[in-house]
Amino acid sequence: MTTRTPVRDTEHKYDIIDHINEDHSDDVLNIALTYADPHAQSARVADLYEEGLLMETHSAQGCREYFIPFQLDPCSLDEQIHYIVFRAAVEQGKPLTGGKNQYFTVISNEKITPNMQRITLKSEQPVPENEPGYAWYFQLQTHNRRTAPQAGRLPSEDVAAQRQLMEKMRHADSRERQQVLGALFEGLRYYTLRATRKSPDAAFADIAVIDVFLHGNTHGSRWASTLQAGDLIRSTADFHEHTTHLAQGRALLMGDETALPTVAALLENWQNPIPPVVISITGDEADQPYLPDTMLPAGTHIHRISSRGDTPAAITACLKLHPEIDTAWGALEAADATAIRKYLRELGLPRERNRIKGYWRRAAAPTDKAV
View 1 (spheres, one colour):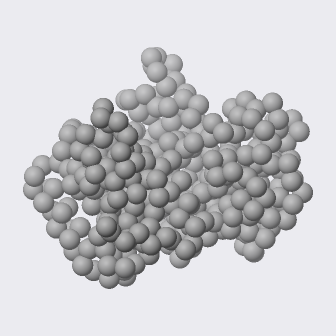
View 2: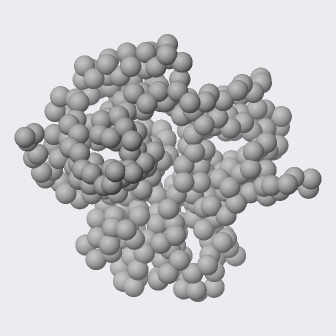
View 3: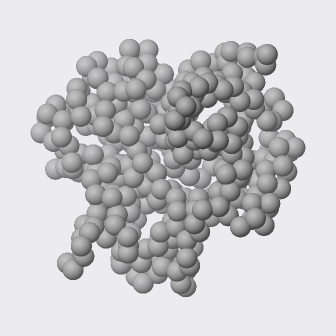
């Protein structure tokens, strides 16, 4: 029987399990189809060990469990998960950068605070209505024409090339793997849908507003700030947030500039009869008006803090004023998110109602909602 060594850092283990099951169910199913049950209809990661993951699959034959060994030499749990996710996608014939193509035409582009760029887009396909946190995975370029989206499996030569890339990563060291992944995803970023509406003659919502945080002279910031009316852009994947747990109890909403579009959308569509506690985090105080007081439901407690200091300490100080928190959603820098998630757990907030996420990591450009 394969050795199953328990992961010592149980908090980190559960963070990974919750994240991949909730936010990457398609990736989990790819793993199940590739390494467990080729007839699986759904799947979830039940547990993680140093040597592999325990997978629970559901099919017409019922529910079964499989232990799937990791494929890399001993390295961090995060690297092992990243690799098996990408390898399974390749074995399923799917493009690593997503194959769900959607094109948009830029209608307008304007700066709404010193570091927030608002891009208004028109789509030929319906865009989601009232879905806070929904995001598209945009290519950081413009296109001269639309190309037909890929359907089904990739051509065999593309699958072979991706397999070759995965073999290269498998035998590389950690630093080399990060370089390969960095190059592969350099030209892609997730950006969050802020609002939607219909054109006067449209049968469905076809106008999407995307607010992009400009964080220095980065690829994404240059792309967002230079788009012009008439430009054609494309996304290759999408992402759905989970926010239904905020409908009851005293809710905490928090976010830095990368997550404030989701916070704003949640507040505009607030259905919970109990007003929330809101923590708005910005590096520049001049960006705080992005979330105006006029947007807040009556009775909302809002704290506006700076990310230039000890952000977890500042957030914790705010939370000590609100011991009544029943449920939470937020997104910010990954290490800071881990600290706050842990603090809320220590206060007794269950994992399923403690959804504080890392959208980016220090020393790297924000990639938003990456695996």
